Image 1 (tube, rainbow, N blue to C red):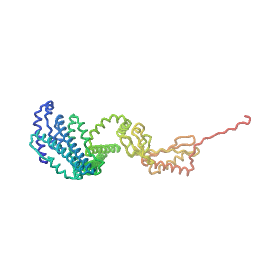
Image 2 (image 1 turned 135 degrees about the vertical axis):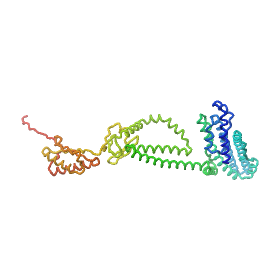
Image 3 (image 1 turned 90 degrees about the horizontal axis):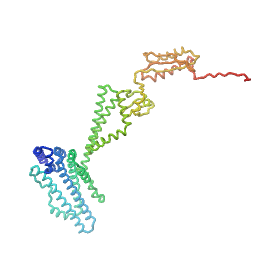
Length: 498
């Protein structure tokens, strides 16, 4: 059968240039369409990939003829299934009645209906196939599927209603698989016709209405047989199980590929391009998400889901979504500006958008901060970019600003000496720039001395706390007071006669 199919396909391809060359213009092609005979139906079981090749060079008018031919095959199969279902109903009547003659009559009617429709369906299919063979100049006549109606009916007259019903239910399973196969091939032709401007709505509406399995819930045996038969059929359960397996496999492969590509991109950006870690992570994660999105779309096709309408709907909704997500788009633009200008990077301690914390992660919509008390805060990028950004740890070194107040009765020069000794003796204080210790202001309640040592950014808080503690301890030892804020109140005595 496969060798015959290959020969017929080769003959059709070779014959195409002959009639194509005779049609010199698009107008002549359209005029020749009424005389065109469907040729792709020469083999109703033709593989889908081969059928796609055959229909690709056909014109719109020729594809209409091909669609009608496949539509007739599908309609005959649907009529055949309906007749067999009606036969099952008749056998149920025979099983439910207590009248032997009525039961026999119901069984005979069931056999007669199914045999008649089956003969008509086979003859109709054979007629379509013969027309395709004749159009290609082939003299290939087969008798496969021919039915000797009288013989089958006579053989079935002696069968019990149970045996007839079992046979009909098995026929339904086979016919449903054949109907699904015809629907798939009709869809291939319709896709090509739609791509060339043809109207395919009516064909697809009919194909959808007759697809699927119909379960008679009033008959548990028939329903169970329908389910098990569908699960075991090649075009039913096996097909969907394989599709699901392909879907999951594609997702797994896509995830592994996306993860690998993201790692490679991140490695290249980190070593070959001078970008911030935020930009590197964002680019790598964006590429990963894009690959996952493409892989998911491919995986949907494995489930036989047509993603074309989904893509068209996304395109049509683009403007509406853009208007609805103006704030998000603003955050997106701000995120790009942050990445370009690089005011901070991952691990920096930043005050931005009203939050002070360590930058943990960023995307094109928001930035994640981790505060010093271990809170996680997400700040919209728009709030960050449109306000002042203070990067506390951007530089390697920082100045530690300290101020100590002593009483007016204390020796400020002694206090300066103590502070300088404390600073000079601290191992984390930098020698360059040189620390500054100077009497700065005569305040209302105290003489204020400014202390400004320098330290590495990572040592800032330790230097600040250590110097403060040691200065307080040394002041206490030297008897130098740190006064409370105070106010002098002067009271005057007025004469008694006043």
